[in-house]
Amino acid sequence: AQKVTQAQTEISVVEKEDVTLDCVYETRDTTYYLFWYKQPPSGELVFLIRRNSFDEQNEISGRYSWNFQKSTSSFNFTITASQVVDSAVYFCALSAPRAGNMLTFGGGTRLMVKP
Amino acid sequence: DTGVSQDPRHKITKRGQNVTFRCDPISEHNRLYWYRQTLGQGPEFLTYFQNEAQLEKSRLLSDRFSAERPKGSFSTLEIQRTEQGDSAMYLCASSLDRGDEAFFGQGTRLTVV
Image (cartoon, rainbow over all chains, first blue to last red):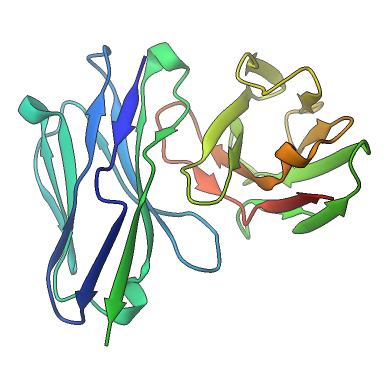
């Protein structure tokens, strides 16, 4: 069975603060993929990033960065210099071949960025 | 291509009625997924198709739920004899192939009264 845990249900920060969203996963597969999605108030899930299990390099895209650590089964997401537009629910997800490659989502973290 | 589209965006129905939702995936995508999302939760997988073949349906919530993708293009999700507990957002997603990122539609919000 696979599982994704996002322990932080809600985070509130003031604009320009850095914030890290935690994600811990469980899977028995050695090959798997990890994802982050953003769900703004409009409701549509927006794809942010996909990493495969063999690539532990951290990634940076503008103000966003991701830290993948296989040793701790974590795939954390950091927003630098947060902005009000970053306010949304963020979901971490996992897919693996043994589970048909469908996405297993965590419960999400609601991020509120105040001006 | 404008992405994954779902129709209708909102559906209000009376308990016991049947409802059908449609999903049009991104045109070259082989995989199509259905998920359900209830308030405050992450999306929950229901079923998926590889082209026209439904490869996993054991996660459908009950035998009242069924899905089709007859020609490997658009898909429909039907709920028969709706119950109040079926009220949720139903999301469709598509991906080029397994393991690839899935792109989601805007969802169909079902309210059963």
